[in-house]
Each structure stands twice: as structure tokens, then as C-alpha cells.
Length: 558
Image (cartoon, rainbow, N blue to C red; front, side):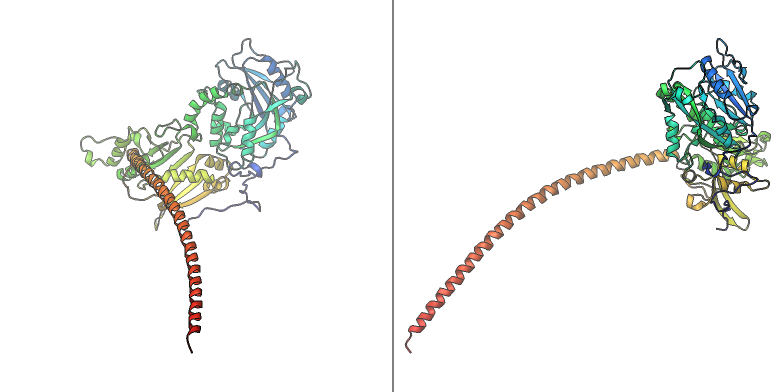
């Protein structure tokens, strides 16, 4: 094949190159970033503390922020009172400012603080989490190495009595304390989130996480429609915007008491999962229904709706009949200006557009758009030339390949001719977002994607793509095939049972044969003994007879 991906590696390290001083993290393997122990702080951080009641804990949290080693002039502290009665107050000596948000809910409170923030880094901090003195500095050391990071500190959960004033020795005051078991376990299982984990965004917990403000703007504010799970859902959108997620054990903190999740995990998961399944396609294990649609589909296919009715229909119908049900399709075309000729419809120069529009106008998984419209939370985009037909399982196989190898782009070679190369493309949205953050001026975006995730060419024919539409099987055919398979399985099970009966019969017969053989061997042994005795008797008789013959012969006259 004449088309091959670019191969660009950093000098002698086997790592992606850096352009304009921005290092390119591949996947979530942030180990190429080396935050210095000594650095000159330049970035401003906005610490957002949503709070509802708990003035005693808030006072301790603010005292902990006042002791941070990161420069105070580069630190902005915003406390959001989420409708507390009596209202919260900022204690004397604190540099924090107070914002009031009467709309209930932690997402609303954080969004109110976010609207006031001016820093290049947003640091979420709960109102019952006390930071150790070097925590913010440990976060910011990372943010000075790359502009697309989300850093999470390590919390320990203490049940110690609350002091009136924050002591100097936090460890002596709050230990023994319990680790954040879930977070520590996930980090250890994935080699620090570096070995292509499925959902590194789960590290984004609002208790003590910092994020580059540019990423937050790209991802958007917290989803205030969610009852629970807002941190994880926003973490997912940050990943879609190109974020790398880093656990920082030196950014330590003490959570004053257990969290709501620790107190009632099963009930919280029940509520959270009901909502996040609709918004986070990466949680495929929550999407167990074989046919339903979700707010955010797992993949969106983009097809040129102006390429001719038959060509468009061949591609769209094949996708709709495929094994990947969790998808949407965008057909681009001038649908907003399309008018139908009602006097001579067969002579309408836009007849093919009219047919495409009429055929798919009411199909819920197809959207007719004047320009490409893909929801930013959709993880994969398939760009398919109209007229090329994927097989029933083609898209599923491409998705499996992308997930297994962490690829950012799969280019499907459909045809090579004098006119050029025809290809389909499966793009991972998060990889392209990261690539846009690190690409140099004039650099092809695919080259940057190759650095941050990897690009692979595959041959379309080997993945079931072709220029001719085949029989559309769909779910009805799959149902019939399953019924036939179940019937065949039942028949084979019955046959297996019959054969097991035959085997039992043969085993019984073999047992009888073995018993007969033993008896026969005994009879043969007896006969051999009798034969041996007879032979010995016969030999004796012969000897006696010979002696008698000799005596007779001696008596004969000479």
C-alpha cells in the first residue's frame, strides 16, 4: 500500500516529539513530563470552595489555604455559599472572597465560583478538605510543564475531633486516617494511570483536583442537571477536550470525616449510574440494553448527503443495520434552503436531495444538518464517503481495534486509483482535541494525532467495506439467527445426551467384556496347566514303553 502513517519520535527516547516547547503525552502516559523541584511560579490559580453550612470546617480549610507555599499573590480563593442559613462568613486574616449562590446543588455552586475565577488554573476544593502546606505547589509544578493537565491530590479521611484552630502538625492532629482506597487502587492497577486505562477521567474528583482553565473552558461548566456524579461527568468532558490525568501523591489533604459516598455507596451508585450512563459512552458496562439510544452516542458517522440518493442510502442503511446500535448519523447538505417542486417533481434538479431528506427526515438516529454537527462528548467520529458500504460488523471491529491499541485515528483504505485514495476515517475525538493543543503552526493535524495516540491504516476489504450494498440483515435477521442457533443448540444438546447414554451403555458392555476376558484368562491358565500335566504324563509313558521295548528286544534269540 502506498499510503503510510508518519513516524515521528523524540530524540532517543521513543516518545512523541515536542513542538514549540509543548511536550506530547501519548495516551495518558505523562511520564515524559518532568516537573522540576525548583521552578519559578508564573501561573495564577483560582481555588474554588463550594460550601453549604459547616462554618467550623470551612474555617480550618481556609487556615490551611493561608499556609500554602505557593505564592499568595498568584492564588485566588473563592468561597461560594450555596444558600447556607445562617450565611457563611470569611474569618479575619483570610484572603478569600465570598460569593453567594442560592441555586442548590454543588454543580451550581462550583459554576458560580468558576464564573468569578480569573486564574490560568482552576483548583476545586471541598469545604471539608484541609490541604497540607505544599499541596497547591505540588499541583502547580505539573501545570507549569504542560497546558492540558488535570492533577488530583491524595486525600486521607480522618475521624479525629475538629480542633478550634488548625494545628501546625496536621499528621499528629488527624492521623490515624484512612486512604482514598478507590483512587489508590485504580492508580496502582494502571501503573499510575499510564498504561492506557479505559477511564482515567474517573480521577477527576472535586475534593482536591486542579485543571488548566483552558481545558475547563473547552469542556464547559459542570452539568447542573445531574443529581450526583458531576465530578466524573466533567472529568469525561475534560478528557474529550484533550486532558491528561495525573495523580500527585505529594499533594496531600485531610478530609474531615467520611464522604457521603463512603457512608452509602450502593444507594449513591444507584442514583449516579442512572444519569451518567446517558452522558458517558465510555461506561459501556452501564449501557446494557441491546437497542436503546442514549443522549451521547458512542459514535457519530458523518456522510455527505449531496452525493446522490442511492449512494447515500447504501451507506446510511448499512450503518443502521450494523451491530453497533449506539450511534448517530449526520447527513450534511443544504437542507435549510431545499424546496420541493410540486408541479414536476421528476424534473426537479434537486430530486436526489429531496429523496434523501424525505427518506431520513423522521429517522431518530439520522440528523440532517447544513454543516457538520457532532456533539463534543461523542468519543468517536466515522467519516464515510457516500456509496461505500460497511459490513454488518465493520464498525464494531474498528472500534475494538481503536480501544485495544489506544489509537487516535484509523484510516480505512477503500480504493486506490489514478484519481487518488478513497478512505474512511474513524477518529477519536479526545485525541484530535489533544492534537489541536500541541500541534505546531502549519503542522498537519494527523501528524500530531499520530504522536499523542497513534494512527493505523487498514484495508477496507479486510474489514468488510465494499462499493456494493449487500443484504441488510439487521436485528430481525439477528433474532432469527439466534432462534435458529438456540434450536440447533437444543438439538445438539439432545444428541449429546443420547451419545452420553450410548457411552454409558458401551461402558457397561466394556465392563462385561473385561469380566469375560478375566474369566477366559483363568480358563486358559487352567487348560495350560492341564496340558502341561498331560504332556509330562505322556513323556513318562513314552519312557516306560521304550524301556519295555528294549527288554523285549534283548530277550529275542540271536
